[in-house]
Length: 224
Image (cartoon, rainbow, N blue to C red):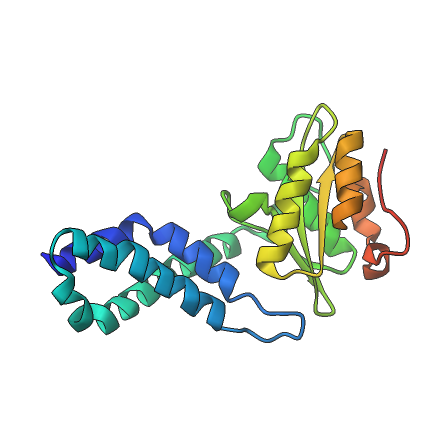
């Protein structure tokens, strides 16, 4: 009974666990992975969700005997989910990405277009699976410099929310730079927040020539 309860709880939170594992095990600016963040996250989940539930059901005595087995189970579940997501991305042929902007394209195609344009500029860029954390749409890397991007296919100026989300994603993924990309312009408040947080605001037409130097804080990079 206790084991099944624990497995059910893990299944209930498996996608969140996989997402948090991916975030916590991201390489730092020196290309190293610090496992401490994931260990802390895992301990928090075990204590606040698994053990707490066992205590509510008067089954806490089963926690210690199951502890190591539970950790192995979580590792297997999260690794399986992350590998499935990576396999699904790898199955999408690179040449199927849209090559040009179309006014009637859907948001997912727009993300793939932006990733394609970054690749043309020399970045290793890949659209993330739908539902990625904090609105993160593209992960890009060049010469060990990481850039996180949120794409907005809009018919009106982009506001503060996109800037806030990609700023948070930059912190979570320990990226060097963050940017919002849109076919539209940006509101004044979005520009002000981007300036304060160091988030770049681009039009997609700028991506095919984007260099690391363009991201360095020499001057504001805003599109109007």
